[in-house]
Image 1 (cartoon, rainbow, N blue to C red):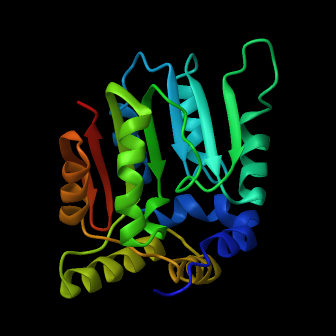
Image 2 (cartoon, rainbow, N blue to C red):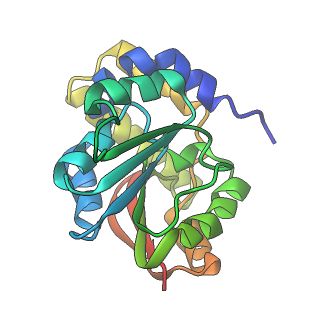
Length: 228
């Protein structure tokens, strides 16, 4: 198994990550909108795994202002950006919790309405991707939903090549600079992307119900499962 240097890579690129992200995700509006639509409207506790700089966390907080949002990330520079973006967790009735931790090993809060991860799980090795699923399932209350909005691999080498070429053509047409593309390719060195079908199979094997892929555009997909 090759070393996983994801934390070091994201620590190093935290300062430019937000500026680059929207340029590097074709159709990001539809991608994030599909994720938000799958969260129960009456959600009281939402966990954001791999929250990073809080870019998607801010969308969650705006869409569900009455929910308690718990951000978990292992990069201190990234989580500092999230605090700047969303604000402090102090107050008589705090709606935000920030946890500096590796979500693959830390204890997750219980009785969650939704556990969401956006563009994070693809950095994990496949055995760890599978190992975290039972822990996520246990942290949800019955009827709670897990939503993984992520960067996925093509089901064949030919389609994987096509995905990458389409991605490069699209982001260049959208105005991504050579530096932004270079930085993204640097981060992608730590990618361990997995095709949709395998991930849906793992969700079912872990005990999730109502497993499905709700959105897919080339190498970006939104996958869900519900705790029975």
